[in-house]
Length: 273
Image (cartoon, rainbow, N blue to C red):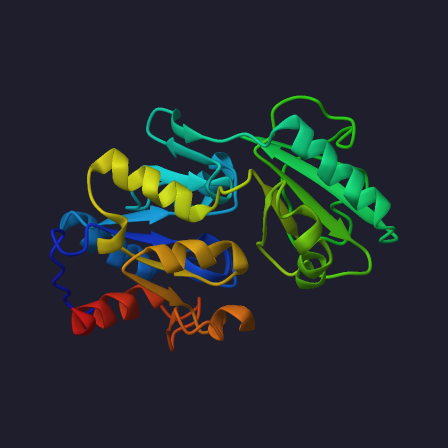
């Protein structure tokens, strides 16, 4: 690994998405990236996870690595200190909004459609939601449509539509009832209104006492857009969704998630500053 020199007073934090960004195609942080994380931590530059995953889902891949202990999870609805499982910030999807989303999905007649909800580390799905899924997520089967407890976000998956198509279908109908984003080709996420990874980043910045505008971020999907736009420099990995790569406000990396994008970001920031 090349020697790096980063001033934490200029760059206090780097916000990173996990899947498709800092994790390679095997779902791992490779050895060179892990070494780079340790070098940045030694320089007091925080590398903060910003993910759609639950806290436990994030910990499965970052535990033992030099990520910052404060994590932005569930698309910004939950910011948590993983050292002691202490909640720094939390936003809940109001039950009336939740019910409106469910009824709108039912009225849309999408064919085979399946809902799941996440709240903190709970992941409850309808039967069929995980069918033919490429990866395993610990979950329980439950009555998602009749759920009346707290939820951090609601997730829709169908047999006939991908996540971008679903975003188009529900964009106007539900924009006043939720913040919609995609975190993969199959999932449409419904989060609390006006809550995104950018919200979580602002909470982290307030917690530590620095400005989000002095930070950078790396992402690859629609749930990263607000975050990438809110920081000083927002970068999309080379394998990002085309809508991200076409956004003129977001800088493009030549590195994909298998090519140490974090190192390219640091080098690019040095030249931009």
